[in-house]
Length: 502
Image (spheres, rainbow, N blue to C red):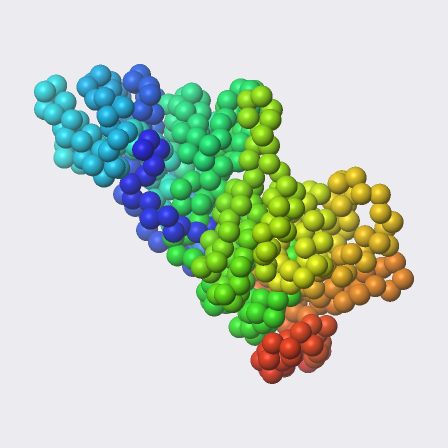
């Protein structure tokens, strides 16, 4: 009950690839509030960030931030003192154990009724707008995530970054800006973090100060608490958009050309083994979700993730999630354990949310033993670096295999590497579609099918470029495409994209 937002429809999805267009209007500012377990007065908190400036002019964000703080300073002494008294009276009045048995909407109405009675009994002088704001703040405290609620309600925010109780930043249109949101103190922030992670059976405290978790809608959460975080608990939330993105939408956003999207659809359809490479925030998970749309509905798909984020639409999906050790340091289930186990579950495709360790070897083995069409993501800055990182992670697992043997395994397992990047103007682009075609001596040979060429930038700092074919008329997976009857579509897409060299 506690910590679950009543208005969460469970369909929000990470806006990894974002169209460079003006952000939608922000919801009306809603003041922050204390946690339900504390009844002490809250320090002045500040309203939600105002409407984000148009894309490509994000440099105007800093002057807007002070404007968000001015109304907060004017009402801080009276509004927050009143709020503290009402909140204390509410905690003394309600039975939290009984409240937890109610559904969120019923509990919210109960709280609103009690708060209205408290305001009337204590005869507080408040306008209707202030009273509504106070009601919303207190409901967020008891049933939601307190000061974070106004930010979580906005669908134009990609990331929420809390650096201690006094600094909250958001990412809008690829640009980071500071908000006026504040927490009462670090303890209130830690309480909210504990509320979030407890919903998925995890914990964060001094003995276990690092935690990965997720919100009910699948948004990714990372918490690192004192003593590791010196200036107070650091909370990072990677939000998911309510509407799931598709490759066609990525085309509209400029992340890939229409012909390039057609090539990606064919790659997913013909069961190529795919590794999506990219840096943090480059859109790897979004792209992985988009590619899974082209998996046949009758295929059995098993996903392995640290925090369950993927939102596959196929009916036959088994979702697996790792588990951290308990208080005694036992019971841990690693990604490698999950990948090993899913090989015994008769999968047709295995999807690993993020490969970051020795489990890459088990994934390669799965790709090489009949599970065609398996996918995974990896952090790297180029397709060539991706291959190097795979070798390094195999070595991390303690395998004493010759280098050539490892590379032969890689070549026999991976068909295509898709490189995603976040450019300096904040936009996300697919920069490479690269094939792994074989070995020449001890060197892995790759060839680029599609590249993104940057031509310059406009007056607003927006990078200009285009996706072009490298002239490969028949990719290495041509025979696979012909087996699935997709060779004609592939030839048309590549021919349409091919550019004559200048």
